Image (tube, rainbow, N blue to C red):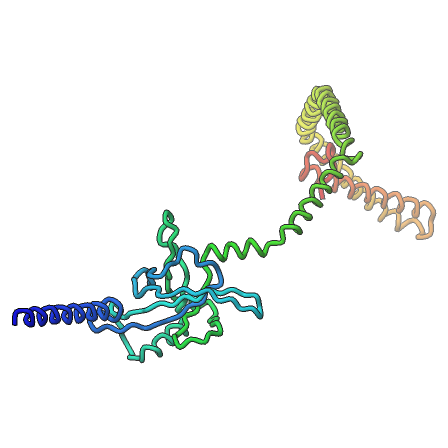
Length: 321
């Protein structure tokens, strides 16, 4: 009886242990508190060194899943190697606002709006990688041809991979050839006879300029006293002319008045003479010509007087327009 009771207790303990193990498996490997997991697949072209099974999958730094499998696929037709990474995603810590969608439709919607997967480094010291998801709407949707029932999330290369590809695309041979051509051209230019003679020509030109500058300085030094004396003489002459102009003006005015008086007397005499002498008389014609000359001289003197009154320095510098 005791043996049977003992066997029942052992059996109950074993069954209880199995139930607990099954519950733990469902909790940790399944959905946890009744949650639901989605299996996704990602294809990477580059190396996945440092990415291990169990590595976290994060969306902008928030862990939403983990890597469950890593496979290397060799395509013999194209001699191409791709890395297929499978992961489980959970929505336990993701709150959805707005329109409710089916889980598969939700993934497709996110992919259409730029959801991409990228390998990032967890720690520089360990070199371990994790899968970082974020939105990159500027990138194209590139999906690999896979025979998989799981949703595929497009991937983008890492910053290091982009840098490596950029460096690999540089034509270093062409750059080296161009640099060699530049160096050769510079060497030929420097070794040219005209270039080698240039320093001597420059020195000669500078020496000639320096000599011309010295001669100009000495010439100016010699001319300076003469220019000063000339300017002083001109100033004195102008001052004397200014002083003499009033007297000259008065004399010219007196002469002009006398000339006008003589002209009037001559005209009166001509009038009386005209009544006594015939029109075609030579004496009368000569006297008329003389009278016209005297009239022109009178006008010239009057114009000179007006000019001197307006421009006292006209005799020295000439009349201004």
